[in-house]
Image 1: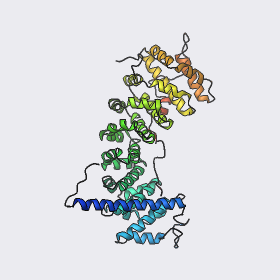
Image 2: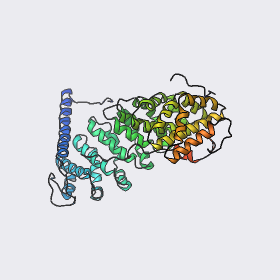
Image 3: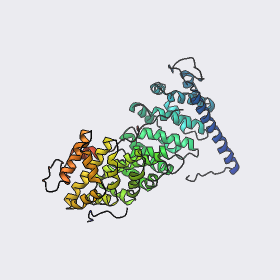
Image 4: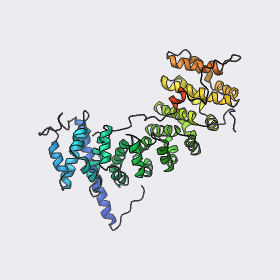
Length: 435
């Protein structure tokens, strides 16, 4: 068994058959132009602050900037004319994208979901697929009942198939829709997983659309250990290390959040994290990452600490994690400070069981930890002050009998319940995309 001595130096291929190369290129150019024009028009509307619909979406008279009423939308989506279907679907999407009180319930009760799902399957009409996926994304951002209506309408499988679309705008919107569905609960996560979505999502993490793909995977691993295992088996941990080192802090944050929920699983999952080389980039984020990223990294360490074996805890200490944790004790976020103090306390208890506490205490002193913890005894937050006091009295008061304030390491206690858990992420788990 290792000991706690001072640490060491710290696009998939798309197959076209029977089509001329120049013809394929012309089709791609035409579709791209159309999608860019639609996006440009939407941005123009947003800049001009033109309201898409009146307060009453059922109004028979269209308001400024609107060409269709709800009844016209219902009629349009049920025609066989693709152009009329597109216009009606786009109008429905605009209704669902309005900032205040989007009429999700009205659209569901109008029976539009089955037709929107059918539009997802019309590969010759990618603009219609895009608008339908966007509308379904916003419906699925609503209540669990509204998300269930999207699932029961048969949306998951065609959305998964759109993850292989050659049109990245369509693909991205399908990812957001699946993310909202997976973020709603365990049952829907299982359906998304069984539809073979994870391999496609992992492939997209490295494309032009990493954020929604990573968010959707993150929503999946907030679920059960079995659901997390499915993501691991699909290769999730093969892509996370490089994402922790991504130049964009927003991607680092999403990756660290997903990692924290894997670390909340059993010790077998934690061992996979170690084997995939997650600890060095994690320590680097704790040292140099933006604070929003450091917070997610702290959660990862906390879950690792409370769920890992003694050997895994030793490996964590040898990775150099204590120094950046100690340095973060001066931040203003009291919740994160308390979590860090609890982690330090937990590791000290583990070292005591191995008769290695003296070595660990010397290490903490060398990196300035004792001074910082002692200073926190005077913190204005009572919980911070008490937690710091407990650590000093239990582990750094030489010649004094331990006050035995902290519970034993192997007991089911409030500390374990507080830390070892999956958390729903840095933002809300469901997203409503807007024009």
